[in-house]
Amino acid sequence: MTTAALVDHVVRRVVEHDGRIRVLVDGARPTRPSELADALVAPLRAAGRAVVRVHAEDFLRPASVRFEHGRHDADSFLEDWLDVGALGREVLDPFAASGRYLPTLWDSRTDRATRAGYEQAPADAVLVLDGSLLLGRWLDAELTVHLAVRRATLERRVAPDDRWTLPAFARYEAETAPTQVADVVVHVDDPRHPAIEERAP
Figure 1 (cartoon, rainbow, N blue to C red):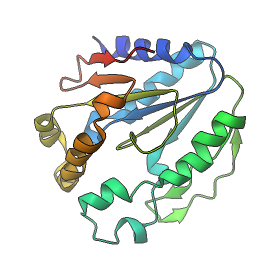
Figure 2 (figure 1 turned 120 degrees about the horizontal axis):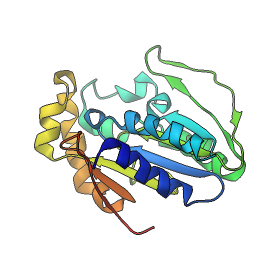
Figure 3 (figure 1 turned 45 degrees about the horizontal axis):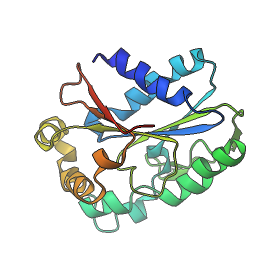
């Protein structure tokens, strides 16, 4: 299908839910999960839903934790970089309960807290979170989307400076099986023609 048809499909899945809902868009950086997440915003608003955008990269741990075993340790990248507890505690859980959420926590470029204040979402809001290695980590969501590519495709697309992360994605595939646990799996080996498989709602 086309990218526009993919967006329409995901939006239809989202609006099936009443009240506040949380959507995770998961994929390695070369699959561009942030672009799909961003593309959902306008059509969801057109459907009458308020939208909150959150980026997992704004909830990384401090450099002292991320780089404890060096800057290119694939196991740390998988296990220690993302502050999963903070995402649940400050974003996903309170958003579902009351609409309160923290939009950002940590600026990895400056290695400082962002000092962002809490914000309040209305009762029918949709929170769209994008990032990598998000599934299988006790992050609650009503809809999960995984952008999948074959290993050879990922190896071809990954930036030279990021090749050290490839073992982390191999472990993620083996241990988490994101194509088995996501609600919607989008195969993007050819990004111009994404192909969908999904579990029943």
